[in-house]
Amino acid sequence: MTISILAVDDSQTMRDMISLALKDEDFDIHLAEDGQQGLEVLDGLSPDVILTDINMPRMDGFAFIDAIRVRADSRHTPILVLTTESSNDLKARARDAGATGWIVKPFAQDKLVRALRMVAG
Image 1 (cartoon, one colour):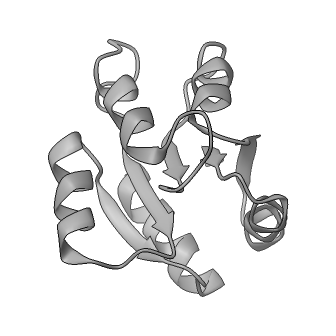
Image 2 (image 1 turned 30 degrees about the horizontal axis):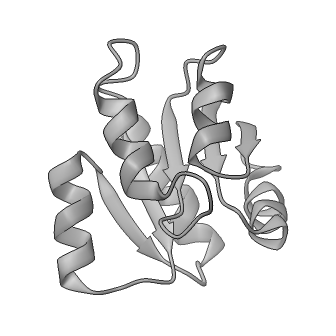
């Protein structure tokens, strides 16, 4: 079964790394540069999992998660945070906003694939 992913990160290098890590693993990957563009992409998409960075211009990951959770069509979509941040306070803030899990960059390909498959069900 193909799993649809929306990956949101302001770094082109990170978007390329995510695409490279998932391209041979039966994922349908959609990309956005920040939370604002992520919401625009989400308007025409029903991903199985959303992967988001926290520190981004225009709309950061926390605001993006908040915006996703108020939308009826994505209220229950699993959200994994993929970021360089690792403080417990930020993890708690993301969890309170509705994030499903947290992965610290740099990521291991097998760990990312396993986490995405696990939360996608």
